[in-house]
Image (cartoon, rainbow, N blue to C red; front, side, top):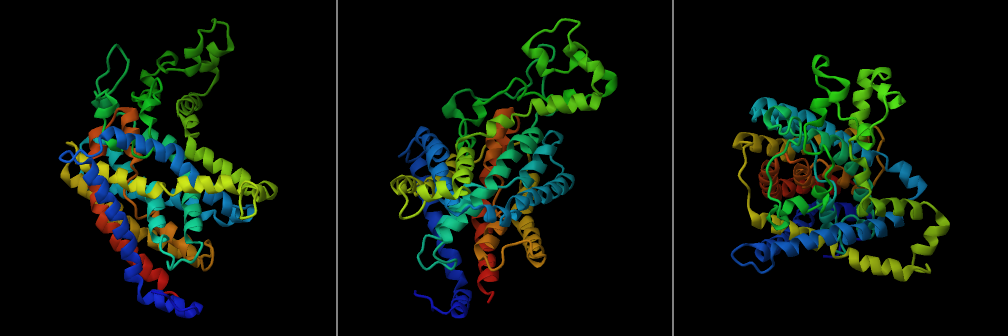
Length: 452
């Protein structure tokens, strides 16, 4: 189908055929997911789980960084950096609104007390990376897509620009919200490790643990599987200077006259506690291949002399960007095959409860997108957004529409807390998301493409 050439006619044409352009990309993604499910299903066993785990590592370490660098670096400029400010702000807004919804879900559905915080963060933190990239890639795959010839490049750039703030949230808010609750875990060896017994064999772990951020669960710190914050912020009557595991004291045992030995007396108690928590927050782990790709794209893209050497049809390093682009094209099918492999594993047993699982899914997949549509509409009315950029609006709306981030499974494994619950919840959410995302993308296309 060839659309008319007049801009007004094009808008009217796509507005009248929005259903076709909304459904076809989803059918493509569904086909890839079904192929992954068939390949990984226990009855067929055409591809073993180990292969899917290796594929997820390739996506994380190669395909995704190439995708980010190729498209974000080409479009990012100092001007665009200022114009795109609402993209990371929208991630923070969606997470904050999700936290409020999660609190309401926890109050209404009354999950087991040890999963109260898990209910909140599972509702709040959505998939802002691989799944939106796959949706954008599928929408833009057709040459007559309704977002124009630069659909894929701009869409990937917008999604990639949001990832740095999402990764920071993972290693700060999500990491601490997933802390094992001190009341429901056994303390051994007089304050030693507090942890859930998990299978140690790499192949016995659920695929979702490595589906989006492979290797996270192996980056354990001394206190990652303990209720560290709960012990640090114990009531004053039960807290002494020696009861707090001070990182400085782990490095060396200072002499009694050392300034470090009297810091507990000189430093205010609240400041000392906040400092210790900050020092035990593994923010240093954010420097992974996708983040390096984002930083490199910023450096190259915002320095015109360097950018002219790397990007463009006449650039001396065009052969390099073309090679990276070939690798980047494997990202979308790989992500959907991995998702199909995750479906093939089926849900794990969970203590979360059916009512809470349904409550989280309804809040995340049905209620939050409605609120997000209102937020994006209000931001547009306040002139916070780029005028007449439908892909920009589409990406902002997608940030409210996706299911809970698969990274929750990796963080749960890292912290030794709610691993089975995260696995079961993510499985059912992604099953329900096949229908909710389809419904909302049809709505979004109707809203965006009917606008003349």
